[in-house]
Length: 274
Image 1 (cartoon, rainbow, N blue to C red):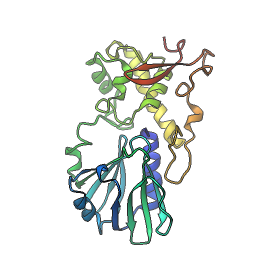
Image 2: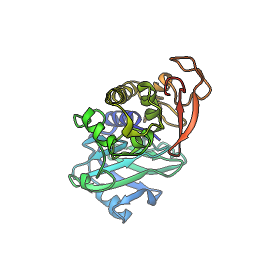
Image 3: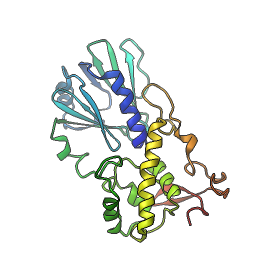
């Protein structure tokens, strides 16, 4: 699943491609992806004549702001956006097309059909699912060491599933939790509330630094993720543990191991993360 760095890369790319464009028509080929409003026709009609004024991000969600609405898009496992001339043949697994008055189209492609759309009047999106109740952004002023400590000190969960909880912190997924825990030298099965102040301080720092570096490199190209221009991310070249099962740890030379924590495939160095 694309995580914060990948979604931020998509946001930046789309911002350069579709900002200011006016929607002439919307076609949805997979109605189940529209979660709000319930009637897909309302969704289609509301967007006609709207211009894309801003593209924002909240955690793993893209938010397209038009004149009157906030269109919330979740890419889920394999969702991709692309901008094409209107006469370009439509590829298989394309489930949404936003036609613009200039003849170009924003197309959403999703092999697994897991992506979602929510459409709300601007301003009301924060009080409705899926944005309501989300935790702080890793790069925001709200994500302080004290805020992280308060969240983790109250749970008996293991640290990895705790960090994957979007109510604790948004944007982190399997890749970057594994990487941040490795950098902080913390085993993913540690009970979150047992982390010392020093460990929490280091973890807080490494979460921010890991995500920052990933954003700068355009995210990680894992499985099928590419950005909206068909370009791959480069942060996978910097990964220390994720996807490196059986390879040598870049820090100590020990063999990277794969295990299951909280139902998720998890990569660790057994020496660096005792």
